[in-house]
Length: 289
Image (cartoon, rainbow, N blue to C red; front, side, top):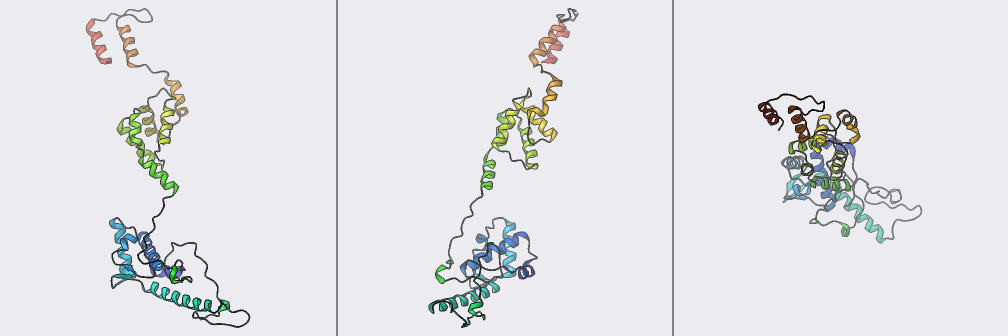
């Protein structure tokens, strides 16, 4: 069977109390049940439900205990068995009608196993939601079209968004920041901030931040620190342009040391010599260093 109806009222009454994980387990087990038209093999429920964690396996156990019975090495569901049997009756009736040339024309009425006149029956419409579970009536299907019980479970293809997220996970954003002069702890704090803001730390995003940092007279460490302090997941040089103007160019340590030595030895720009003994000069140089 590749189709069955979903009776919302029946499902809500019987299974509305299940958790989200238990709903998922019930859906996957019923999909397999109707697809194979047979019970679930005793050792297959976890694999069919893709249950890997202890919590997921516990959800499968709850569903099996409440809706299935272990009979002869397979898990059986009474409602599914009823629906499958009804489907087989309709399949046989359809095959018999086919041998007689199909549905009769004109006013002649022919009754079939469903209890309805042939002329009043409607062809079942495919259900667009093929993942919806339980309490369903299947479409006509020949035995040749049925999926064998040992059919492999198809692998789910990852979506483009999932592939992009996996690629972001493989990119070592922390290592990239450290290579560009950011301290490991600062890099870790910044990536935690981006994660909280749901901003993936992709290679493109990190390269953009490093490029914007290069447009300032700040070090990359200072830029990332500022992002952590201000709660910025990204960075633009324009955001700190005013601070650059107020702060002016920074003096490196060599320039500061030279200027201080000039002042201590009396060579100031105002031409006012200062008397300073050798001990004081040495102490000041050590402090600057």
